[in-house]
Image (tube, rainbow, N blue to C red; front, side):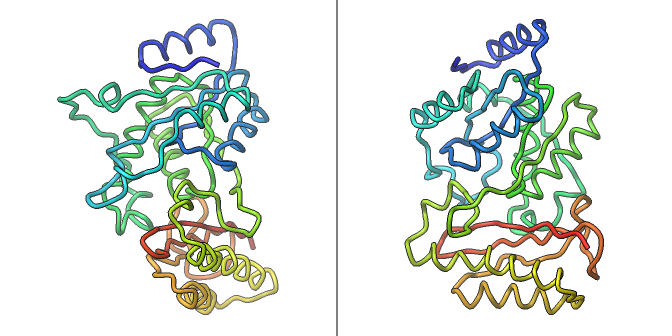
Length: 281
């Protein structure tokens, strides 16, 4: 496995792989890898990748004021060992200075899907995400990229960016990976106390109950969303949002039907967690 620190070396590596006929997959991450990230490597292989690149870069531009950029968990040696164990071909781990020159003044902005949900309380977040992902795509030159469904809004925004800007990259969205008790895998789970972890199970528990009720024939959308909110608040969670949207366009829906996504965000203690569930009816 090769560890690459500069954009020029990364592009040269990918150019060589492309010339040999290899299909390259990239998995953009902020490091502190867990089973959810590792499942994306498996998805990349199953999706036809001959060479897998994992990027590890805690991107400063997607953190707002007073967010957790400085304390975001980092452990590069552990991450590299996990990648080597999964037979990753290359890890791209640039510095902030490499990714953002001092006088950098260009942004990539998606203006529709990035307006609601997480953007309501993190208004500059997705501008940072789309910009860094575009830069990572141009550094790694992949044929396909894999993102997790846990960040459902982000995945749809990246798909839209790729479509609108004609990136020759296929976006693959991999299912959510959960801990044994149901909590969606996240690097931020380490912030939770034991009690907060137990309380945070209200997210997956409430989403699972919502899906079961829809499959049983429930059609009152507001009652379903109210029940989900009550489940989270009953576990001392502070709800950021509980919504029902079209699974692809992220437009709010007013009735049960079609391909739906139910995304939630809530604080347990000081830790903000997100989760979602897909339902088709």
